[in-house]
View 1 (tube, rainbow, N blue to C red):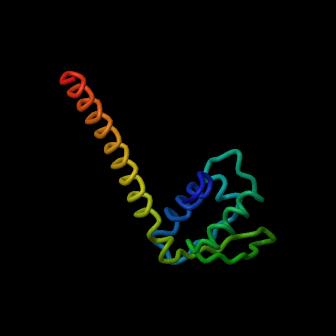
View 2 (view 1 turned 60 degrees about the vertical axis):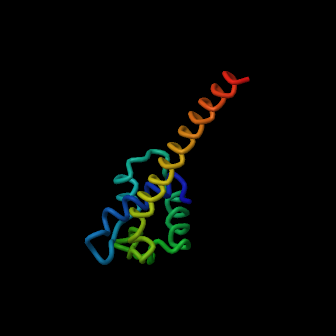
View 3 (view 1 turned 90 degrees about the horizontal axis):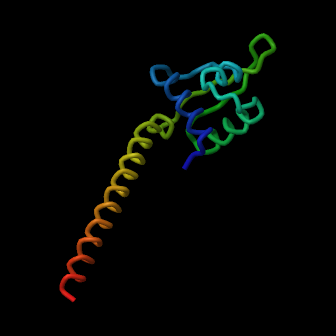
Length: 117
């Protein structure tokens, strides 16, 4: 399960890469697209390495006019990222509804038992 920052970075990379084979993006541009003020370049570097190690994308570092640039290509796991998010959200909603339903059923059974005894 990814952290909040990793989810934001992965969502941006997925949205930027979904129609292309690869993406060239600088860390500064990536931080601007994410819109998170608390993400620094070193934190972004760690998140990118973690996502690369988890197998979401292939990552190559490059230089463009002296500026560091990420060359990102989604792997199969990265291409299935959004579907995984939908499945996780669906499972969460199902569990919440099941919990509410069972709590209601337990309440009703308690009332019935109280009325009988």
